Image 1 (cartoon, rainbow, N blue to C red):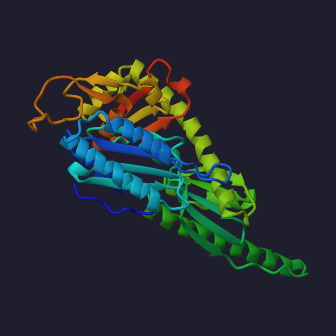
Image 2: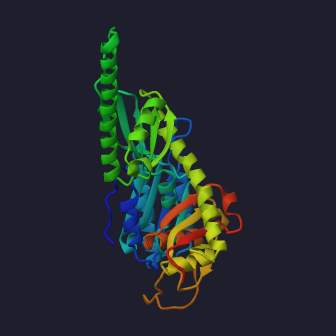
Image 3: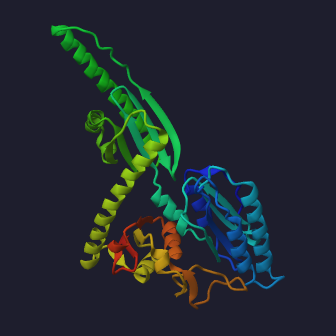
Length: 385
């Protein structure tokens, strides 16, 4: 697998995920490192001690002079250099995937923070947290507008990807009466309608060009209501909420308010989704629950959408013996993958990886209580076996 360049802060994990999913499992150690580099109380945390301690501890598990230890030692050195020299000051999260013996180096810097430090050493990249961040910080459009001026923001992974401004013609109010007043009012209404059309056209172009999950409208209620009425069906269906906001609000204020609206809608959608999943499962429909049944469905390519509780990794913290047919095809010392012996894997990460490899959607459910009785895992199926 070719190495990639050390990119600056990314606004999409689609490309790095594709490269990581294409990586073939290896007998050599693959390091997956996630760091929360966000500044607390104005000061960036010292994560170097964590990295040195955890990697040094794992290095001791490989005998000196073996290909595994040599590959791991090179990865340790490169990771330390990268963290010392190449981290952007505005990055709140860093993910590094490395296996020098197999030519793997993927470094991703993020505006979104993973919430803690994590390190894994396995036979393939650990993608659980990358997929979780992608779900928690969706790509969506925020439209802030009044009758004369609009700003359109595209947010993704906690960062502003794109902005656009639309300025309408502002009508000057004059003292007139009778038919003149009526004509003035019609001119105002025509100007507002023209502005609304310009805004909707600009928003529509953005939605068509980008993978936008939803739209949040913000501004004065009268204008947002007018826009909603004038939108074509394909845009209106993507509107998540409309929030009251000053059109001159800062970019950060817009981001925080609209992300909160997106998350509130997600919480509602989560509850509806789990109820629909359970209804399907009880009726013997296109759904399954529990880790084992879901993993088997993933191995068969049946899963359309994987549902994971955000606490699923803590529910399944230890490596578990997985049937060879369901586990990654890890080669033995002779390079063969034909063994029928069980293979150990971290269940939550294996579920995410298999879902991504089979083009299934991965959705994380915030409220653990919704998934009581299914061990934090469920799936909608494309077909029944």
